Image (cartoon, rainbow over all chains, first blue to last red):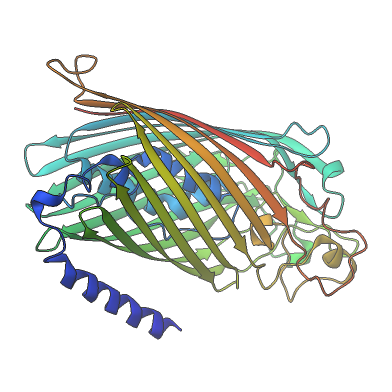
Length: 73
Length: 423
């Protein structure tokens, strides 16, 4: 199970990385830069939601880091 | 205590969100917010109320260094079931507690990458948490793929009743009257015969990859793993086993992992966006859970944003979880017994809406300081459905009274008000 999961992860990573080179040009990132396209664009909201749900559910984590959108670190 | 432990579990996630979002904004920023969580309870126990203020700010020092600082608190009042049995309500006791947590982080930025180091301290009456962590992210060539890696280690200590060498079924639970002594802000001190501090170490790692798929769609995949080693029982909780009521006893080791996928799709003609997410969770206690969430964001003009969202969740019980009736009439599950509803079979649904008022600076900054200011108001309704742990066995007492749940359809209400500014 763990091996299959790791293999899937590697495949997904390589796949996404490959398409990242040509997927979207810089001039096409107007919508991706919008705040609604940024994962967890409100850090307090995301932290508060996780805080509440983790206190009521056995599951935890896995929702990923914030950011994204225009990919402009 | 339960708040602090859960907080430790998710702190790495919150930190990764905070630091990565800071990178995404690429601006100095400040955020202040308060959440209020109100849970209904049976009878006249007054419910559970949690007030959760948070304040964070981040600033760049030169062009390659950033500094983040944050503070949050939990003020909790409510009732807790001290004995897990089929009549939890009559044995519930009222309590209140306050938790404080502070974080400092230092980041170093390159042209396409960032690495951050952080330290967090959390304290409350019966729990101390000291955590160090790091988060690294990089944009791959093309700037359409962002990879993020985060890791943290927590050195936590939990106050417990000093039970000496007593066997689990002989252990007494901690009470609010027992003193939990601290030497100073970060060190604890045992009181022989009364209370001892027990260690809990938590290692957490998270991998995230975010990918722009098209000019209007992006995708995020995340994998999360955590190992907890040490005292994880609620020291206050007792479980009725036969004629005795010993302190809850659960395993010292728990390894857990989860994976999630999230997708955003912008709809230019409608000036709106659709959000989808799904997560799968598994751990060595055999709690298996999954959730799915659907969201929709709609701009109204240029300064108002409304978001609606709905989420469903379901999990199986831990391998050693039994409904209270069976602990009481049969005995333990192996050597363990628990009254933790987070380890029970449960399903829940949450629906909510968020209103954001966006103010963008024109010739002059907003309030003389901000380039952009978001004022948020959010409300959520939570519905929870307790399921029998072993439906194949006859349980004449049912499961409706073993936890302190409300008797109506609505289980909890969450309100949040916040201000997020970049400058």
